[in-house]
Image: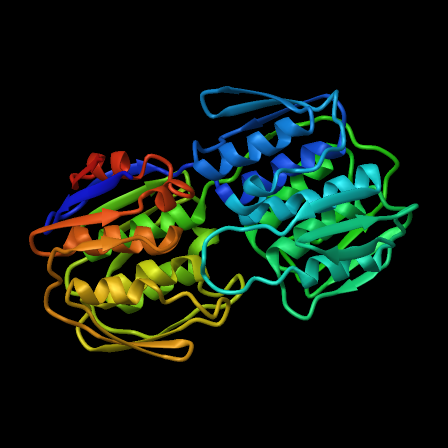
Length: 415
């Protein structure tokens, strides 16, 4: 297994270009199943999760060619097929296949999806949404089957604004008869990106980015060309890395609108933020404590809870970090404690007493964002750290160590 070797106490300085958003790419790749022909997707990051989705789509007869950051996807010869369980278990986002397969073929059979171990992520909201527009759903022996004679538009109300369920409902409803209205929809930028792609294919969707999305069903969709939005979670991670190392870092190719909750919080802890039309710059010196609570967009993103927890571990004072999205997302705390952090978890909150310095240690990533958080901690720590299980990091950060190296970090990947 590969690992990172990090020598800490190096200030990051310089600029990097933000990659395409993994969380926008995966549902858009799945959405190509709704049409027949050649779809061209630009600004696609090179990530393990993207490769797994490519492997899954290939089983359905999709021919995929990558040219640099562009995927050329030919969906002319799609066939309905069961997905091997081992592929479903590699990635949570495989659940996105339910909506487009049900929308186009009126039936789908999948095993339960896997992904990072960050707590229960029930798919009941997905299934209830599909049931509302006419699907009959059966769950048995680890598999989910859904089918419908036809899909008919209806009103869908989510108890919680789930990103994945919102996107799945959108993809299923675009080919349904009549109008579907999704209430209490998730508002993340990635949902707007999916709406834009589907509309390029001929869908009639409006309202993405608000809590109400309206979908007027159409009879067919056509291939389209699209550019993926920048990855706000990657950008936020590098901003926090800049703050953690008391550095001066500029993230290019990112809309500040995507990260206002993050940049506001970074300013609260004492860093200087400069916002441009498509860049964010951070300059940091002394860092002070603050409280953070994760919330659905436009609140503070759960995917940046682990990285900001690393930052607050060396802030002056005591912070409280509350996780409201996933109940088991503090696994990185034990590893940070090995590096000298003073953190106590009580239920869904972590009480963080800032220390003057972290120290290098051998630690292991437990999930994607926890892995990023441990790298940030190692960048600021005294001495040398080893971060194991970097395959988790490769799921969601493109060329992570290379980008950090370009900012001056002393980080190497090795066996």
